[in-house]
Length: 108
Image 1 (cartoon, rainbow, N blue to C red):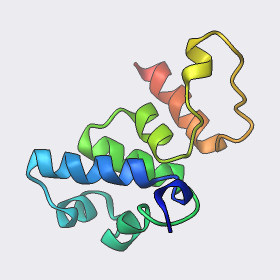
Image 2 (image 1 turned 60 degrees about the vertical axis):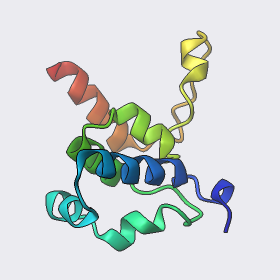
Image 3 (image 1 turned 90 degrees about the vertical axis):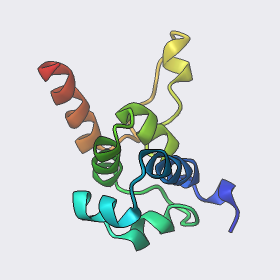
Image 4 (image 1 turned 135 degrees about the vertical axis):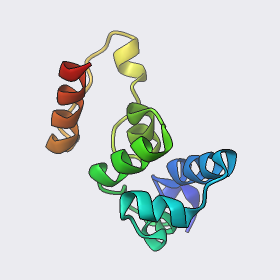
């Protein structure tokens, strides 16, 4: 299966690179988040995006920007349209993701 059929492949690559840069292992990430190494490895080849909550847990554990993580994991569409002032269709974004982002912005 090619990377274009694995929407989370870019996020998987970022996770591995970040772990390496931080001198941490996938086992550390598993202990920190409860997400199995098999789940993380599957992101490189599975044909569907991972659960948003899983992506957010990994992003938080590694200090990766949440929006960038969701975009790279294929959970949210590219935000380029929003930056250009066009309307962004949020109908495909998981409700939990939207609520988590609203809560984060209210606290921040």
